[in-house]
Amino acid sequence: MPTSKPPGANAGEQGVNALKNQATRLHGAGESIRGNINQAIDAAAGDKEGVRKNENVANVGVAEMNDAVHRGHGAGVTPVDTKGEKVKQAAQGERTL
Image (cartoon, rainbow, N blue to C red; front, side, top):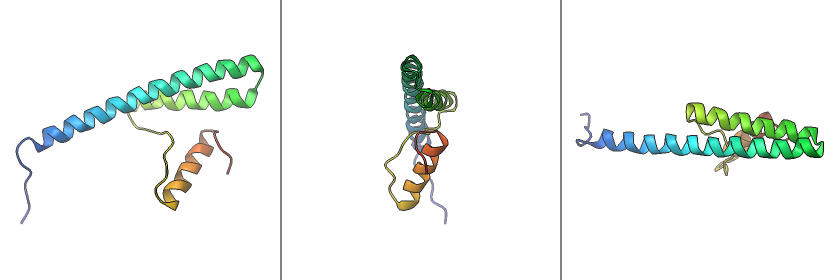
């Protein structure tokens, strides 16, 4: 027999999801700002690798702002999660495998 949710349960879930989306967008804005500032500093110092890395950070931040999907670093709870984070970091130019 299927169980039903109490009235208002979906509204609560929607509210939590809306907060998570906004937090992700805010995080993306911060990452974009951080990437752009660090990119400018690296450019002034002549660090081409740093410019490339921080351009990726800024681009990932913009993507987070646009679609509210967090793409940042995680602690990695399991070996699979940790490997996944390493792969993501490598794709972003923040780590070599």
